[in-house]
Image 1 (cartoon, rainbow, N blue to C red):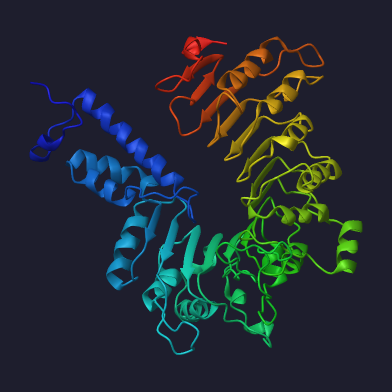
Image 2 (image 1 turned 30 degrees about the vertical axis):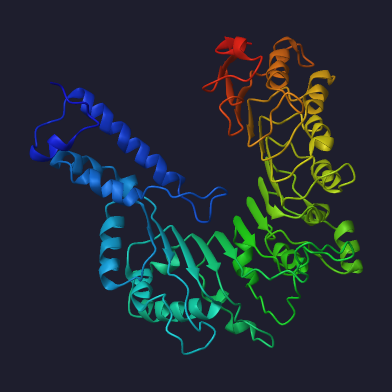
Length: 503
C-alpha cells in the first residue's frame, strides 16, 4: 500500500531516492521553512504565540536521509540566520560558527538573547555576555546583522572592551564588518550625568548604516489606583529623565540610512538625534505609549519655522504612540515619503484629535505621494478616516489593523468625486468589528463592487483591488481576488449568495 509522504518514518531505514510525490512534498516543506526563517525579526510580535523552532526543524530534516541532508546543506539561505537564547559558551560558539559557515557567501544574521544580569549596575559584576561571544564577534564569521539584548550599557561596554582586545590580535575584523545592529537595553541606564561623552559605549559601535536602539523605558509619573481617576493628571506622562546621559556620536548618526529608536525619554532628545540623521531612508520611532514634550516654547517655534528635512526618507513608522506624540510630524518634512505606518496607543480618537491634521499637514508640506498607509491600535477613527483616505489618491496599499470602522467611511469613499483611491491595489482589514449594526459585510463588499463602474479623470477604469478581511470570526472573514469574493468557512447572515461569487 502506498504511504502518504507525510508519513516518512519508513525513509529512516533506507537511502533510496524519493519518488516524485514525496520529493514535491518535502520541497514544499523546505520552502515553508525558508519563509519561516525569513519572517523572523528582532522584537516581539503584536500577538505573541509559541512558534516552532526553525533550527530544530531544519536539523530534523537533515536526519531523514543523505539526499535530504545534501539538499539542505546546499540551500545556503537556510543557514544564514540563527538565534541564541542561552549562555554563549565555547561549545555554543563552535556550533554557531559551523551553522553560519554553511550559508556560504550570503549575508549572515545573529541574534543573542543573553538573559538578565544580576547586579548589572556594579562595575565588577559578571555579565552574561561572555568572553567567548566577544571572541566570536572579533574573529568569527563576518556578520551582516547582529541583534543583542543586554541589561545595561555597562554590560555592553564590558563586552566591547573584550572585542577590541581580540581585534588587536586578529586581522579578521568581523566586528567592524557589521552593517546592521540592534541593541535592546533591558534594565537600568548606567550612563549618568556628569558624564564624559568620550566614555560612552556608542563610541565603540561598528560603522553601521542601520541602527536599532531600545532604551530602558521610564515608568509613568502618575499611577491610576483601582477605581479612581483624576482628570487633572496625565497618566501617560513619564518620569523625568534628568541625569541620564545619552551621547551618540554625530558621525555614527550621519552615516545611518535606517534608524529604529524606541525611547520614552524626553522628546527633545529624539529631536536632537534626528538633527544628525539627514541621510535616513527609513525611520521608526516608539514612545512606549507615553506623551512627550519636544522642547520648550521657543524651541517649538523654531522647529515650526525651520522643519527638519529628510530628503531621502521613504518609510516612517510611529509605534505604540500616544495621540499627542503626533505633534512631532509638525517639525519634519519628508518629500520622498512612500510608506507611513502609525500605531496609535489605545487612545479613543474623536473629531477633535489633532493627529489627523498633523498627518495631513506633513504630507502637504512635503508634497509626498504616499503609496502605502497602515493605521493600527485605535478606536473610533471612522470620524476622520474618510478624510485621510480621500486626501491620498496615490495610495496603492492600505492596511487597517485593530481599527473600528463604520459604514460612513465606505459611503464617503463611494460618493467621492473624483473617485477615491483610483490606484488602490490592496486593502487589508484586520481585527475589525463587522456586524449588522456598525459595519455589515455587505457594505464593504458593495463598495469594492461599485469601483467596477468608476472611472479615473482620464476615463481609465480604477485599478482592480484585492481585499483581505480577517476579523477573527469565520462568519465575517473574506477575500476578494480578481473580483471574486470568497467567504471563510461559514457565512455571515445575508451573505451566503456572495460565496465564491464574482462582484
